[in-house]
Length: 139
Image 1: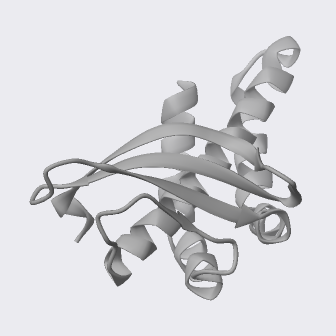
Image 2 (image 1 turned 180 degrees about the vertical axis):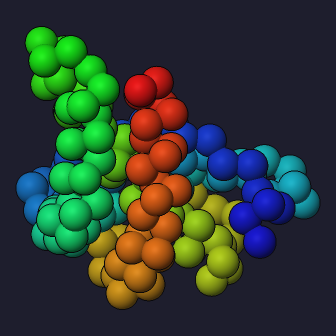
């Protein structure tokens, strides 16, 4: 269903204002049948994001990167990988929201929305997420 949409990453991850327990990414979303696009804010709870990182998704990726880059540049790559991981998780949550039905209006997908579905999706697509990050980092 997401093939009917043109999704452009706008910015993030950033902290959600006045909520240190959450981060957000912002996407521009346009369905082919819509006259214009909308802005969708995707929030992630820090706790959920950390759980996904700890399930081996980010640590395995970090070790792959460590093996491929110079020691003096590793810290930069590691931080960028963390940001890209967050962006990938946000995108997965956006895809879930689109599959559930999304209206043509600016909106926020809150931290509470689609929590269990997101966990399952990210775990199931761990390899694709890793490959997308490695491609973006060009390693």
